[in-house]
Length: 477
Length: 80
Image 1 (spheres, chains in turn yellow, purple):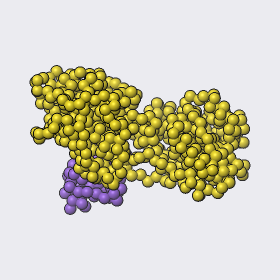
Image 2: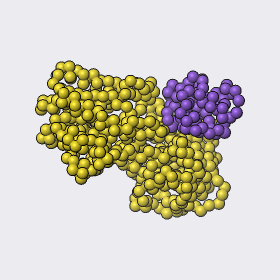
Image 3: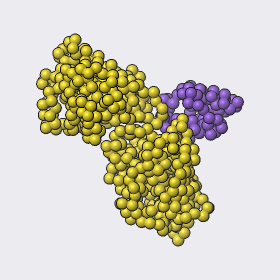
C-alpha cells in the first residue's frame, strides 16, 4: 500500500467519485497543451490515498482537528509514488508523498481519538457516474475576486472503498471524507474552475452548526501579481482555506488571416512543405506563414487531431493549401510514410518534441535524455535518412538558446539539442547537397513555455524572419 | 530590523516551505542554487515573507529579488 502508480483510469474513476473533471487531470489531448504537458493526479486523490495509508496502520477512529496539505510538485501518472508517514509526535502526523526524491505532497494532520460510534457517517445523496456536470466553469481573471457559490455534496461509499480500501472510512468516517473530497470540485470545477492549479489546503474543525451536505465557497483574496486565488470554504465540520493558481490557458497562435498580412503572396510558392509536428506552437505558426506565402503544406500531428484539422480549416477557408496526416514518430506507420512520400515534399520542417519539462537541479536522468534524444536526434535522423534518399535536401530543425545557458535542471534537454546540432553539422559536412537550418531560438510564446510565473517570451513572429532566411538561403545554393 | 535577524527569519521560512530543516542560506544565495526553490516555491516564500514582515512588494521589486541579500534589503526598506 505504501507505493503505487496512478493511471489515467484511476483519474477518471476519481473524477466520477469527486465530480472534478478538470481536463488537466482527465484529458490526454487537452492536457498536452497545458502547463505540465500531460495529465497530473488530482491533489485531493493523492491526499486521500495518503490518508488511507495512514489509516491502514491506525486501528482507532479519529476526529480530524486540522489538516494542511501542500501540493508542491505535479504528481505524474505512471511513475512510482511512495508515502512516508512520520507519527513521532502523538496525535500529529506528517505524511509526505514522493516521486523519486522529490516531495510532491506534504500533509500535516492533527487529530484526536474517538470511538467507532462517534464517527459521523455521510447522510446525503449517493452519487453515480452521471451525477456530476463534467464541464468546469470558465471564469475570467477579472471575475476571480467575486466568485461565490454553493452546492450539495454527494458521496458514494462503494466508490470510496474501491479507490482507497475500507480503512479510510473506518478511521475518518464518511462525512469527513466527503467534505475533504468536495474540495477538489470547488477548485477544479468552480473557483477558479477550468484554468485552475490547486496548491494548498488548510482546514480546521469548526463548532458552527451547519447543514450536513451543504458546501459554501467564496473568494477570500486574489493576488494578481502571482495569479493566486484564496478560496474560503465552509462545510459541516470544517472551515477551509484553499489556494489555487489561475493557470495560464493553452497558448493560442495567431489566426491565418492575421499572419497572412505580414507575408508576400508568393514568397514561399516554390515549396511543398512537410511540417513534422505542425498541430500547435511553432509548427502551427510555420504552417500558416508558409501557406500564406503560397507553399503547399502537409502538417503532421500525433495526438492533436482536432488542433491539426482546425489549422487546415483556418488556412483552407482563406484560400491556402494545407492538409494533415497522423504521424507518430515513435512508431512510424508505413502507410503514413507513403502518404508523406506521395506529397513529394521539397522542404521539411521538423518541430517534433516531447513536453519540455524541467528536471531536478544537478540531476542528469538517463530516461529524460533518452526521451529527448528519441525526438531531437534519432527521430530527425530517420526523417533525413528516409527523405534524402527521395531527393529532399532542405531541412529546418530549430535548436534552442537554452544551450547557451545550460540551466541546472535542463541538462538532458541541452545535451540532446547539442547532439542534434552536431548531427546536422555532420550531415552537411558529409553530404554537401543537403541544407539544414538549425537556429537557436529564444523562448517563444507556446504551450511549452507556459508558466505560472510571468515570463518574458519572444513573439512567434520571429519565425517569419527565420523562414525567410531559410527560404532565401535555399535559393542561393 | 538588522539584516541578520531578517536572514534568520527568511531561512526558517525557506526551510519550512522547502521541507528541509538543515538548509542554510546566506545573503549571496540565489534561488537557482537551492534544490526545490522553483517558481511555485518562490511564490510561497515571497507570500510568507510578506506575511511575516507585514509588507507587500510590487512586481518591479519582486523582479529584483535575484539573491537572498536583495530580499533582505527590500524587507529593510519596506519595514522601516
